Image 1 (cartoon, helix red, strand yellow):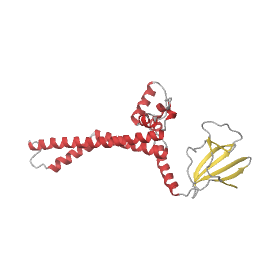
Image 2 (tube, helix red, strand yellow):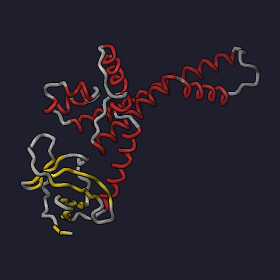
Image 3 (cartoon, one colour):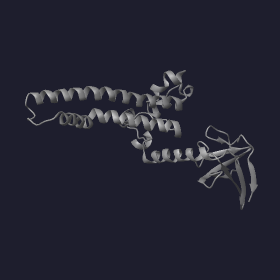
Image 4 (cartoon, helix red, strand yellow):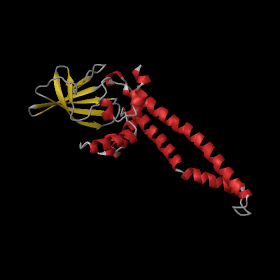
Length: 255
């Protein structure tokens, strides 16, 4: 219930503020962020239509009044007055503000839907950075922490590409390839789907053993996503440990 009632409003906040909420675990942030982003886009569209109607009617009326009063010369036409009003609309700061809100909502919607990167709105994030500076605390760079950095844009593109690629690939069991290099044991997981949050150097538990995720690469179909892991001598379960428990029994082979 909190996800739909408070979630869309709380999703506007920077991630650091959301982490301080005592009830944050009760909210499904992906759904809340998608709703919040969609409502932001819808607000921008509705506001633009009202702004377009008000501004064009106002400026065209003023232009016609000026033309009738002879202030614009004898040869001015209605098309020229309408074009002038349209140029004023495009160049007006309110139009650019509404365009920014729509684009920001689109980025937040794509981030939440496809990359599970639940972004807040940029103005509140900038306010958070100012407050951190005033308090004398250092934090990550503005674009980097907000999730609007170039690296995140690349992440969106890469994730969307992986989604499209996975949608056409058949669902097949994972393939495990075990290998040994001197005294160490490695195994590679080849999967038809990308594994969420499997980013090096995360620790992965499989059966009763712990592994360190060394690298993530891509190969040919039907299992394009490949994860190379190195077995650890010991490990302890924790919140950051990934548990590998495939739904279908993987195919095991040794090199």
